[in-house]
Amino acid sequence: MATIEIFLIAGLVLAALAQPIGRRLGSSFGLLASLVPLSAFVWGITSLQILPIISSRPWVPTVGLDFSLRLDHLGLLFWLLISGIGTLIFIYAGAYMKPKELPRLLSILSVFMVAMLGIASAANAITLFLFWEITSITSFLLIGFKGEYENSRKSAIQALAVTGVGGLILLAGLILLGNENQTFEFAQWKTASPLAITLVAIGCMTKSAQFPFHFWLPNAMAAPLPSAHTSTAQPWSRPGSSSSPNCLLSSDPSPPWHGSVQ
Image (cartoon, rainbow, N blue to C red):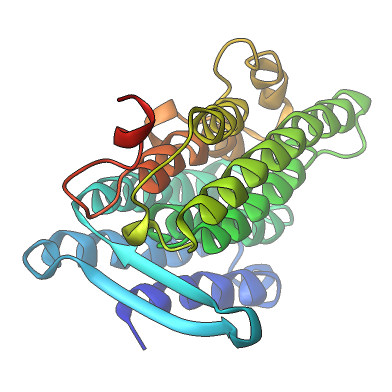
């Protein structure tokens, strides 16, 4: 099992154990939980010399789909940003949140971080889209964390609607690119039509709250402050910004859109 997979699984385990462990440890659980993203950050720094790190497992063999991960220098940049900022957020959440709310918040944040790390290291379109949708769902849960307030509920639904539609647009672009190249593996993409690039760009713009899809972002501050730092983080650490270069840049010296602009 590749180290990338170990850290993704560790994040999911943390999410599953957050409730029972967090209720016992109280505010100190934030500091303990931060060891998971901190470990991912330290590993990322030490792995610079062994890049790229590649992992591929059969997912749906009947149709040739694999669960593929590839961490290269670009992906590592986002990996370090996500895990580094995540470490600080976990520590801050332990001091900021009420002890009874902290386990649920860190559970959702853990899944959100796993999804973001998955986007940064996704090696094919289907893997990317899987993690993309997980960020949409967890963002909805984070923004609507205070579900007893109407503003939180409305803001969460608005964010889910915008990023959900954007996800469908992204999926259309990814499927088009997959059909054009007869594969969903990014490293094997050699060409891309202007329509496919446009669809992918629009999908990424909705997630990264770029104009004209930026209107949902201010309302996302209805989330608790630590999770608001995550779900409305700076654009360079967000799924929409990290996924676009991930799927449009291949290992081939010629970028996949080269043929479409000649």
